[in-house]
Length: 217
Image (cartoon, helix red, strand yellow):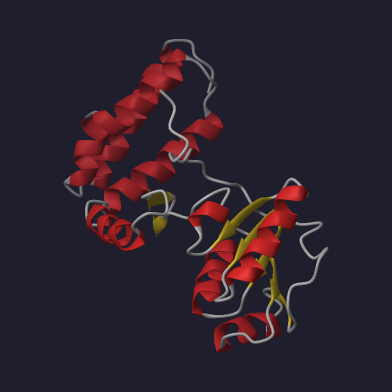
Protein backbone atom coordinates (compact mmCIF):
# COMPACT_ATOMS: atom_id res chain seq x y z
CA UNK A 1 0.00 0.00 0.00
CA UNK A 2 1.38 3.42 -0.96
CA UNK A 3 2.05 6.05 1.71
CA UNK A 4 1.77 9.73 0.76
CA UNK A 5 4.25 10.73 3.48
CA UNK A 6 7.08 8.50 2.20
CA UNK A 7 9.84 10.11 0.14
CA UNK A 8 11.12 8.67 -3.12
CA UNK A 9 14.93 8.88 -2.85
CA UNK A 10 16.86 10.21 -5.85
CA UNK A 11 20.28 11.75 -6.50
CA UNK A 12 19.92 14.78 -8.76
CA UNK A 13 22.45 15.74 -11.43
CA UNK A 14 22.57 19.54 -11.16
CA UNK A 15 25.84 20.35 -12.92
CA UNK A 16 25.38 23.53 -14.96
CA UNK A 17 21.71 23.94 -13.99
CA UNK A 18 20.33 27.05 -12.31
CA UNK A 19 19.12 26.74 -8.71
CA UNK A 20 17.31 29.56 -6.92
CA UNK A 21 18.01 29.96 -3.21
CA UNK A 22 15.81 32.40 -1.29
CA UNK A 23 17.45 33.39 1.98
CA UNK A 24 20.90 34.42 3.15
CA UNK A 25 21.33 33.04 6.66
CA UNK A 26 23.25 30.08 8.08
CA UNK A 27 20.81 27.48 6.74
CA UNK A 28 20.86 29.08 3.30
CA UNK A 29 24.66 29.06 3.41
CA UNK A 30 24.65 25.29 3.95
CA UNK A 31 22.20 24.84 1.10
CA UNK A 32 24.37 26.98 -1.19
CA UNK A 33 27.54 25.02 -0.42
CA UNK A 34 25.79 21.72 -1.14
CA UNK A 35 24.43 23.05 -4.44
CA UNK A 36 27.87 24.33 -5.45
CA UNK A 37 29.40 20.93 -4.63
CA UNK A 38 26.92 19.44 -7.09
CA UNK A 39 27.99 21.90 -9.79
CA UNK A 40 24.78 23.95 -9.80
CA UNK A 41 24.68 27.60 -10.86
CA UNK A 42 23.38 29.18 -7.67
CA UNK A 43 21.27 32.34 -7.64
CA UNK A 44 20.71 33.78 -4.15
CA UNK A 45 17.97 36.29 -3.32
CA UNK A 46 18.23 37.84 0.14
CA UNK A 47 18.45 41.40 1.51
CA UNK A 48 21.30 40.25 3.76
CA UNK A 49 23.75 37.35 3.48
CA UNK A 50 26.35 35.62 5.63
CA UNK A 51 29.99 36.53 5.19
CA UNK A 52 30.60 33.19 3.48
CA UNK A 53 27.85 33.82 0.93
CA UNK A 54 29.17 37.33 0.29
CA UNK A 55 32.66 35.93 -0.29
CA UNK A 56 31.35 33.28 -2.67
CA UNK A 57 29.52 35.98 -4.59
CA UNK A 58 32.64 38.16 -4.71
CA UNK A 59 34.61 35.23 -6.11
CA UNK A 60 31.97 34.62 -8.76
CA UNK A 61 31.06 31.22 -7.34
CA UNK A 62 27.41 32.24 -7.07
CA UNK A 63 25.13 35.16 -7.93
CA UNK A 64 23.70 37.17 -5.02
CA UNK A 65 21.04 39.84 -5.42
CA UNK A 66 20.61 41.79 -2.16
CA UNK A 67 16.84 42.08 -2.31
CA UNK A 68 13.68 40.23 -1.34
CA UNK A 69 11.96 37.65 -3.52
CA UNK A 70 9.53 39.09 -6.07
CA UNK A 71 6.89 37.33 -8.17
CA UNK A 72 8.47 35.88 -11.30
CA UNK A 73 11.90 35.26 -9.75
CA UNK A 74 11.50 31.47 -9.81
CA UNK A 75 11.15 31.39 -13.58
CA UNK A 76 14.16 30.00 -15.45
CA UNK A 77 15.46 27.82 -12.63
CA UNK A 78 15.61 24.03 -12.42
CA UNK A 79 15.24 23.89 -8.64
CA UNK A 80 14.03 26.25 -5.92
CA UNK A 81 15.04 26.25 -2.25
CA UNK A 82 13.82 28.58 0.48
CA UNK A 83 15.56 29.17 3.81
CA UNK A 84 14.05 32.20 5.57
CA UNK A 85 12.41 32.94 8.92
CA UNK A 86 9.32 34.39 7.24
CA UNK A 87 6.68 31.70 6.55
CA UNK A 88 4.87 34.04 4.17
CA UNK A 89 7.89 34.06 1.87
CA UNK A 90 8.05 30.27 1.88
CA UNK A 91 4.38 29.99 0.97
CA UNK A 92 4.67 32.59 -1.80
CA UNK A 93 7.73 30.96 -3.37
CA UNK A 94 6.33 27.43 -3.07
CA UNK A 95 3.05 28.38 -4.75
CA UNK A 96 4.78 30.15 -7.63
CA UNK A 97 7.40 27.43 -8.14
CA UNK A 98 4.75 24.72 -8.27
CA UNK A 99 2.74 26.79 -10.71
CA UNK A 100 5.79 26.80 -12.98
CA UNK A 101 6.28 23.05 -12.60
CA UNK A 102 9.44 23.47 -10.49
CA UNK A 103 10.45 21.36 -7.51
CA UNK A 104 10.69 23.39 -4.32
CA UNK A 105 12.04 22.83 -0.81
CA UNK A 106 11.16 25.17 2.07
CA UNK A 107 13.31 24.71 5.18
CA UNK A 108 11.36 23.54 8.25
CA UNK A 109 8.08 23.46 6.28
CA UNK A 110 7.57 19.83 5.15
CA UNK A 111 4.04 20.58 3.92
CA UNK A 112 5.46 23.06 1.39
CA UNK A 113 8.19 20.73 0.12
CA UNK A 114 8.18 18.70 -3.08
CA UNK A 115 11.40 17.07 -1.86
CA UNK A 116 13.30 16.86 1.41
CA UNK A 117 17.03 17.15 1.95
CA UNK A 118 18.78 14.22 3.64
CA UNK A 119 21.75 14.49 5.95
CA UNK A 120 24.72 13.90 3.66
CA UNK A 121 28.30 12.65 4.09
CA UNK A 122 30.65 12.46 1.11
CA UNK A 123 33.74 10.26 0.96
CA UNK A 124 35.17 10.50 -2.55
CA UNK A 125 32.58 9.07 -4.96
CA UNK A 126 30.60 7.58 -2.06
CA UNK A 127 27.64 9.57 -0.77
CA UNK A 128 25.80 8.59 2.40
CA UNK A 129 22.37 10.17 2.71
CA UNK A 130 20.02 9.59 5.62
CA UNK A 131 16.46 10.92 5.51
CA UNK A 132 13.65 10.91 8.04
CA UNK A 133 11.22 12.43 5.48
CA UNK A 134 11.63 15.79 7.17
CA UNK A 135 10.50 14.53 10.58
CA UNK A 136 13.74 14.35 12.59
CA UNK A 137 16.73 16.11 10.98
CA UNK A 138 18.82 15.78 14.16
CA UNK A 139 18.33 12.00 14.15
CA UNK A 140 19.27 11.87 10.47
CA UNK A 141 22.53 13.69 11.25
CA UNK A 142 23.36 11.31 14.09
CA UNK A 143 22.69 8.21 11.99
CA UNK A 144 24.71 9.64 9.12
CA UNK A 145 27.72 10.18 11.39
CA UNK A 146 27.43 6.64 12.73
CA UNK A 147 27.20 5.12 9.25
CA UNK A 148 30.09 7.23 7.95
CA UNK A 149 32.44 5.57 10.44
CA UNK A 150 32.02 2.33 8.49
CA UNK A 151 33.31 3.82 5.22
CA UNK A 152 37.00 2.89 5.00
CA UNK A 153 39.64 4.10 2.51
CA UNK A 154 39.47 0.81 0.61
CA UNK A 155 35.75 1.37 -0.02
CA UNK A 156 36.59 4.65 -1.76
CA UNK A 157 39.29 2.95 -3.82
CA UNK A 158 36.82 0.20 -4.79
CA UNK A 159 34.22 2.74 -5.89
CA UNK A 160 36.73 4.56 -8.08
CA UNK A 161 38.08 1.34 -9.54
CA UNK A 162 34.58 0.08 -10.29
CA UNK A 163 33.76 3.32 -12.12
CA UNK A 164 36.99 3.04 -14.12
CA UNK A 165 36.13 -0.52 -15.18
CA UNK A 166 32.53 0.37 -16.09
CA UNK A 167 33.82 3.01 -18.49
CA UNK A 168 36.18 0.59 -20.21
CA UNK A 169 34.49 -2.80 -20.29
CA UNK A 170 31.51 -3.63 -22.51
CA UNK A 171 28.11 -4.21 -20.96
CA UNK A 172 26.96 -7.72 -20.28
CA UNK A 173 26.88 -10.59 -17.83
CA UNK A 174 30.68 -10.93 -17.72
CA UNK A 175 31.14 -7.31 -16.75
CA UNK A 176 28.54 -7.70 -14.02
CA UNK A 177 30.32 -10.81 -12.75
CA UNK A 178 33.65 -9.01 -12.63
CA UNK A 179 32.23 -5.97 -10.82
CA UNK A 180 30.54 -8.22 -8.27
CA UNK A 181 33.79 -10.12 -7.78
CA UNK A 182 35.54 -6.80 -7.27
CA UNK A 183 33.31 -5.97 -4.30
CA UNK A 184 32.53 -9.38 -2.80
CA UNK A 185 35.61 -11.43 -3.65
CA UNK A 186 39.33 -11.60 -2.99
CA UNK A 187 40.12 -8.14 -4.36
CA UNK A 188 37.99 -6.38 -1.74
CA UNK A 189 39.44 -8.55 1.02
CA UNK A 190 42.99 -7.76 -0.04
CA UNK A 191 42.26 -4.03 -0.17
CA UNK A 192 40.64 -4.16 3.27
CA UNK A 193 43.93 -5.61 4.59
CA UNK A 194 45.86 -2.81 2.90
CA UNK A 195 47.54 -5.09 0.33
CA UNK A 196 46.90 -3.00 -2.77
CA UNK A 197 49.73 -4.67 -4.69
CA UNK A 198 48.17 -8.12 -4.31
CA UNK A 199 44.73 -6.69 -5.13
CA UNK A 200 46.09 -5.17 -8.34
CA UNK A 201 47.68 -8.47 -9.30
CA UNK A 202 44.40 -10.30 -8.65
CA UNK A 203 42.50 -7.80 -10.79
CA UNK A 204 45.06 -8.21 -13.56
CA UNK A 205 44.48 -11.96 -13.46
CA UNK A 206 40.71 -11.42 -13.71
CA UNK A 207 41.16 -9.15 -16.73
CA UNK A 208 43.49 -11.62 -18.42
CA UNK A 209 40.89 -14.35 -17.95
CA UNK A 210 38.34 -11.96 -19.46
CA UNK A 211 40.52 -11.52 -22.54
CA UNK A 212 41.18 -15.24 -22.91
CA UNK A 213 37.43 -15.93 -22.83
CA UNK A 214 37.08 -13.88 -26.00
CA UNK A 215 35.35 -10.88 -24.40
CA UNK A 216 36.53 -7.56 -25.88
CA UNK A 217 38.04 -4.95 -23.53
